[in-house]
Length: 178
Image (cartoon, rainbow, N blue to C red; front, side, top):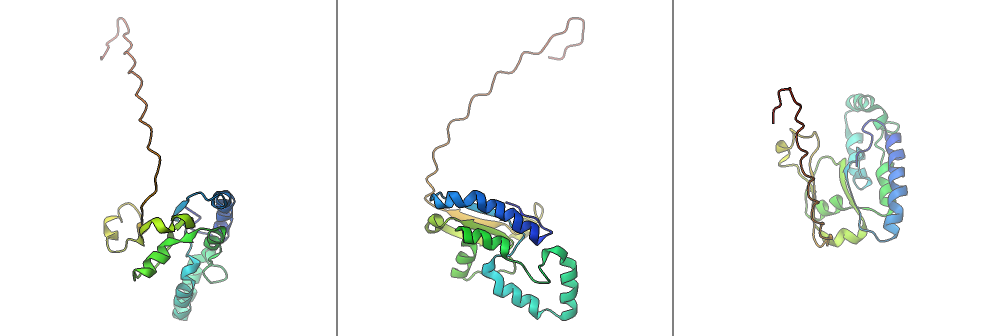
């Protein structure tokens, strides 16, 4: 997914739409993976990021708040859009996995959220900081790695054969390149 990078209220609206679509799937026990650029911190990181903002030099904090504009809610980080997804039943597997494995990170707006029935299938879930230099050419975001086991996807059907190439049209009296 990708939610608005510029306005916390728009992100709240966008994720409310996602919640309406995924909640029935979660309630029905479907396996669900939601990954992407949420442009919003996870509430799991709230204490950490709120503390960082509070400890910022007041002059720098004021400039930071002004620069962020509608990304902040009254000068503070807003966690509502991601919280809506967690309240719907998804889990922030990246936070849990990195915490359990002692992986430190500086920021997370690219997240991996899963239905609870996939949690036991997680092999790894982390933000790829050390090798980001290899990905900078493609994105300004750190790659979010999620490895799962036992997904038991149905075997994909064989691809359909391509239709035959049409015969080239030969126009009498014209130069025909065939």
